[in-house]
Each structure stands twice: as C-alpha cells, then as structure tokens.
Image 1 (cartoon, one colour):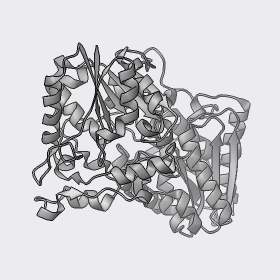
Image 2 (cartoon, one colour):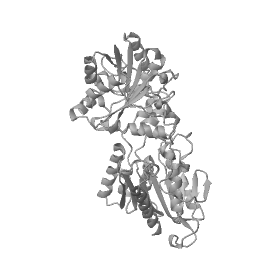
Image 3 (cartoon, rainbow, N blue to C red):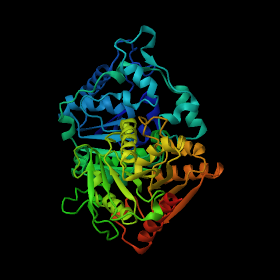
Image 4 (tube, helix red, strand yellow):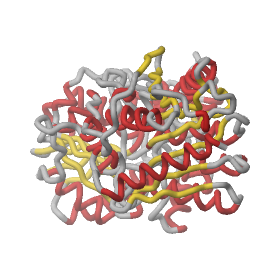
Length: 510
C-alpha cells in the first residue's frame, strides 16, 4: 500500500487536490490532502507566531500516523518547503519526494523568494517583527493569480474557484529559513515540470550540461522527471494526468537525466565556424578581441574601432569553469567580429541566480562604460548582443537607447520573464520596453526548434514590435535549437550567423 501526502502552495489547502485524490483512491492508494495550520477551515487556527516550523510539525504528526509501507510526499510551490523539512526529519518513512512544479529549496532558503511582488519581499525580508495586523499576506485577486504562475489550462470556473477558496497566508512561514540536515536529498525524487509555466526536461538537461554543481544531483538514477503541458495549477487543470504521473513516480518511472560524463558538454563544443585566433586582452570581467588592423570605413575619424559587447545568459553558477567569456561560442563571435574590424567584447556578469538580474545589469553597464572609455574604441559606435536569458538585460537599453548605441542584437533570447521566474523584477521585460526603443535597429536570431516557453516570449516581443513599428530584422535558423552555434553545424546555421553579424556591423558603419 502506498500513501500519498499532498501539500499545496500558498493561499490554498487540501481542497485543491480533490480531483487528484479521487483518482488516486480509485487505484487503491491512501491519500492525505493536507490542510496546514491556518490554511483552511479544518486546520488549527494560525496566529502571528505561525511559521515554517509549524507547518513542518503539521506534516510530522501526519507522517507518524500514516500506516503504509510506502509514503510518497508531494509538494507544490510553497508546499515544497514543509515537505522537505518534514521528510528531512523522517527520511526512514519516506519512499519518494515529488516536486510538483516546484523549485529545489536548500538549507537556509526562505519561501519568501516565491512572492511575485519584489517590494513586498524586501519589506518582509527586512522586517524584524511582524506587526500584529500584518502577520498574514492576503490572497491575490482573480486577475492577479497569473503573477504567481501560469494559469494556462484553467477554465474561468476553475480560476474563480482558486480565487474564491484562497485564504491569507502566515508571513513567518515565508520568512523563516528552511533547515535541512541533507538527509532528504538522499531520498528518491521525481520532478513534475509544467511546461506552460516555464519548466521542461530540456531546460533541466541544459542546466545539468552547464556543469552547475547545484543540479548534478539530478543525474542520480533514482531521480526521474515528467512533463505536463499545462500551467502552475495542474491539480486543477489536469487532475487525472497528475494522478497518473504520481502513480508512475511512486513506481520509479519517468525520464532520467544522463550525467554525460564521457561526452563534452554542448556549450564547450567547437564554434560552428573556423575563426582564426585573435589577440585578446583581459580587463576585469571583460575580454577584448582586437582586430588586426583598422579599416577606415568603420571609423569616423580613422583611428578607432567600433565595438560589439556579447552578453551571455544564465543563470550560471559562480563555480562553473570555464566561465562564459571562455566558452567557444563567445570566443568565436568575438574573434569573428574582430576579423571584420570590430572589437568583440566578451563578458562575465554575475547572473548566478534568478534574483541576480539587477546585479548582472550593473555589471553590463560597467562593462559597456569600460569599453567606451578605451582609447581604441569609437565610443559613438557600440552594439550590444544578448543571448538566451541574457535577453532580459536588453530591457534597460530598449527603454532609453543612448545615441551611441547603434544596434541591439539578440540570439535565441528570453524576452520576458518565464511564468515561474517570480524573482525577476518587472523592469526586465524587453517585450514591454521595445515600445520605447524608437528606431533603434534590433537584429533577432530565432531558432526553429526553440523551447516552447522561450518561443512564446519571442512571439510576444515581435507582436509588440510590430504594433509600435520597431526596426526589427529577424534571422531564422531552420532546425536550429537553443545554443545552436556549438551543436548545429549546418550551412544554414552558418549562414544565419554570417547574416546576423553582417547586419550588426552594417549598423555600426552608419
């Protein structure tokens, strides 16, 4: 007999599992949809002192009462925090942990990071004592639930039910750090990824391939994955499918991510073009790829070079080596434009986590200033080229383009925060900021086989760009995927890179 303990996210309770629980019981399983303290009529009343430890002990009492050979704990969103806290204290009772469209909290993490309101996060983070009348966070309105995650797949009736049944959430459950000994990470685990909310197996495999140590545990053969084509509330939008996936997860089924230790990671494979090595100068976080000689046609005064600053994506863990500016793709781009008489600038910025976009934006602004101050660079002719999630950093430059910025380029970019990227501020939305870009030239390289969640942000950007008559040139890569420069060495891919580079260099000539 398998028992499923189901723990929902903030503002919700056991009611949200009704459809899933019915299907699981039909299979013969025991099911316990949990109502945490303060999260519903059947739960103990909460108070100003209700914290994460309170919810952990709610689950410990239940675990100790369950009489089943196997206990599978399922956490959704905030629910992952008390699930991990309780399982860490009772690892011998738990057969598997299921992350249902949830992150991977670690020891010391706060669920506060889940809040979509940055100002609210900061206020609660620095608040020493919770005021008597501010110990709970009210639930969002019907119109605001999409800020907590994609509502794709929910009917209007289901969305209304979500809003009408929601309750205020105790603040201290979000601000108290999660405490883990590490025992929970020795348990088998399954991730259920909701693609409409910005998660996918392909994205997980990409993070593992980068060598980020935080994700190496995902290559354990006891860790499996499933995808659901829906938004952040699959227990409402796809109840039968969630139940089926949970049963399969309990049986140890699902996709396994290969460690690929014998295969070179895709980001470290050779650039798709044979680019001659160029002189490189390293200054702080930037490398300058320098031309051999100055072509007069590219400089107004015949003595300085224009420059292109290449901005990598991420997040990239600070311990990953080599760092992005030494990855073959960026070295290739830098050397390629240098061969055309343009200084290619590769950059290491500190986008180590989704909460780091402001810091990365500061690093980029500092790097651009440093490049423009170089006496060999024509400060009036600079382009900035963004890749992948680095595309969000283009928002500042689109919002108020300086006169010396001759072009913005973006390759397989993310152009709006994905639905589950709650910690990314509203400032980083190129899909909105393109309205104020005026006639700034934009060169956008789009890959045909892009991940659906990223492709949606590109289409949103292009739709807005068309409305405001922005100057956008789209370069398509047939059959190309994210990071195609080191994985897709076809004539069409090479032609796309050549075309995009030519377009950027032409804008620097004008």
